[in-house]
Image 1: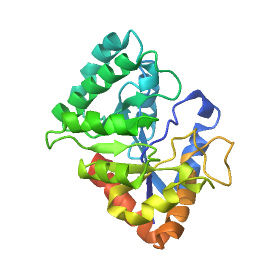
Image 2: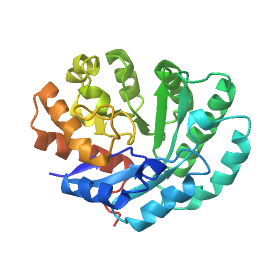
Image 3: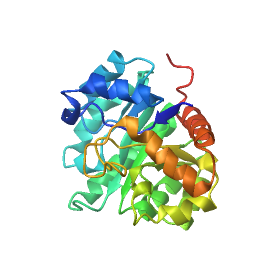
Length: 259
């Protein structure tokens, strides 16, 4: 029974003192592959370094997080663009839009997202989309760019059934994380209406820690906690959850043949 954590920021300072142990615990929990979505230009070196140190386990993605898309976003993306020819990167992102923290750079977020959507299309890579308080807007942005070649995941999906169906109709997957384990999560009524073939698992470590560790630092070894809750909600065995979500992730990120 093997799991894939499709979204973890294990390169951040929160893990500087015990990163090796974090990877060991993930492997002991049957989390054998981890996608590392980049945040900005400063974190990219750490993403690459960690993927190099743990080959076949950690896989890098590059992009500009919407909360870091400020007035200098064009120069940052210009510097990142050289990595489009680097085959070690399995995805673009994380990118998208965010209306929760600060909307004063909304136009910059949208322009940066648009550029990265084009990167994904032109490089035949999936895109990892951040949509905090902006799922309807991001659905529309993707729809406007979709030409049949665009694929990816709406990371940390917490939307409605109608939004989920629109995302699926666009050819995208839904990233399901620790929020599913929270008492107030509305996903418990949404996910039973969907096929498991549209879902992948993620932690967003060190954020969004699942119950019973909520309030503490998240890590990839907690993926089975999310899988167990999903198993209960869908009334499907955890073995089937592991098999199908891993197959979905391998199909999206093409990491099953990478060693």
